[in-house]
Length: 101
Image (spheres, one colour):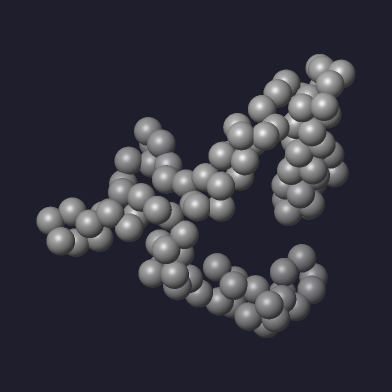
């Protein structure tokens, strides 16, 4: 968490995250909508697995429904589609991490 106005890598970050809305973030995770004994689920077993936000579940579902194929290996439509999705995602993560490759 970086306070607004703080310098980050030599630049002032006025749009940086200034706090987390825990309840808002919980809404993104379907499993965290479960109630146990009338109280919201608290999931602390992240070493075994982590809960997925709905956007990840939706994207994985789309992959299995319409793009399920090997990447960089096939010479057919689904393989090309899967490769494009993989490379696009890889590039987005690279940019997010500010990585060279």
